[in-house]
Amino acid sequence: MDMKVSKKLGLKERYNRMTRDLNWTPSYQSLKDIYPYLEYEGIKIHDWDKFEDPFRMTMDAYWKYQGEKERKLYAILDAFAQNNGHLGVTDARYINTLKLFLTGVSPLEYMSHKGFAILGRQFQGAGPRVACQMQSLDEIRHAQTQIHAMSNYNKYYNGFQDWQHMHHRVWYLSVPKSFFEDAVTSGPFEYILSISFAFEYVLTNLLFVPFISGAAYNGDMGAMAFGFSAQSDESRHMTLGLEVIKFVLEQDPDNLPIVQKWIDKWFWRGYRVLTLVAMMMDYMLPKRVMSWKEAWEIYAEENGGALFRDLARYGVKVPLGWEQACKEKDHLSHMAWNVFYNYGAAAPFHTWAPSEEDMKWLSAKYPDSFDKYYRPLWEHYAKEQKEGRRFYNKTLPMLCQVCQVPMHFVEPDDPTKIAYRESDYKGMKYHFCSDGCKHIFDNEPEKFKQSWLPVHQIYQGNCFPEDVDPTKPDFDPLMEVLRYYKMEFGRDNLDYADSQDKKNFDTWRAQATTN
Amino acid sequence: MPNVFIALQRNEETRPIIDAILMDNPGAQLDEQPAMVKINVPGRLVVRKSTIEQEIGRDFDLQELHVNLITLTGNIDESDDEFVLSWIH
Image (cartoon, rainbow over all chains, first blue to last red; front, top):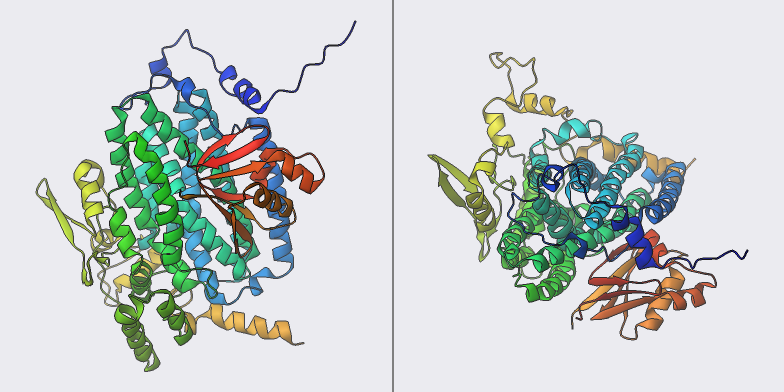
């Protein structure tokens, strides 16, 4: 008898076999009981089979390519560690970007993993369920590889020791933490729109691409390896975000106003989180690839602009706050680094005033703003520091109720004036850094009135270690807050110029070039 | 027409892929950055399996792109033979 050889399946056929053909229609339980979260946000889906992942990645292919990525990544990490990579970076100032990254971003990967695991169970369509399951696995991989990559630095540099503890306590870390807590406490459609579309499609190129290229430029092959490996998954996540938004809008015209509200909210929330990235690119990288402003023009204005022009056919408008974000590109990084310079005693990484050479670069990249508004400030700080009066702000800043960033942002049309907005709700006054954040609060006051704001909590006495005694004559609230953060004063914080990190790095460098 | 783009890590595996993309997209602009390249094309970018195979001298599965892909933009249409990014409808 002749053996019948069947032709190898094509990509589309294989994808269908491995996703929706593995799905079945339940008969013992109602769909509502199986997928209880699908209706309460008001999104109407009529035919889940219309969703198709254009990447058509199936689980078997996923394991194969992820395995290959992991082998490449760990080969680079091993080579980096074996070759004393921690010494090969341009300058130990650079390491402070990793301290921010580990405490600020890596815990978000883990939260994202949890969020997508929920979606991988809760979406009724097999296509998005499989894509979310892959994304959930990707995110836990990112958390793991980032922690592995940075453990090498933890052996040599200060400030990495208690990042998980710090994530839940340190003041500025409430900014990224609250972003993800807001997302994972949303319904499934809002969650995927907030993360896969607003954050990943519209905004992560600004985080992972120029910054990680910058890490490579500064000799950090560890960060390059985990960053590009993570971003290679990101292209699948971005595709998921874009396909979900198109799918939801095509399913029912009633979905448009709900989706638009989420685009407005999550663009603004994500953009505010990226404030940290702006200062990493402009002030914290010793060798810079491009300015925040240039990155914004390429990835937000050009690329995001094209995206929103494409989505206009569904009636989607450019997010509220877009115009303001474009105006802020001349100011964002300078304002942010100024805040960290002010509060350099309360952050577990080092800060510094830019050198004359750094300022020359900033003047060239920001001809409309740096010399006029920010150079005098840095020159003033540098002079004070030279005379032994390095400025550390000892009062605590007002925080925005929504984004939780200290209220340092200026009016979009007047960079000499701090922007200040407020709302009254049930007899209480709430404060905001921008129209965007006020708008978000006014739409969901019951959610955002619950924000855990570090400054409020410190003033209420909720950020001291358990053994603290405020009646002791030498009680110093700032020192006790740092103890609560598990930061060691004088080692993990203060100016880079006087740091143990700098001293060690200079010694190691001298040893590397002599016998 | 606004650009679509694809960004790839710059290494030995991507060299023939980058060459193939440049060959198949006459309007393509190569933007070289530390450790990566970004290829911008107005409106539509195609990655063609056959051209990569010709450059690389072996069979190539388009999904191998995932190993060195950093980021991209545009609406995706992927088949066994072509991977297309576009803002054109």
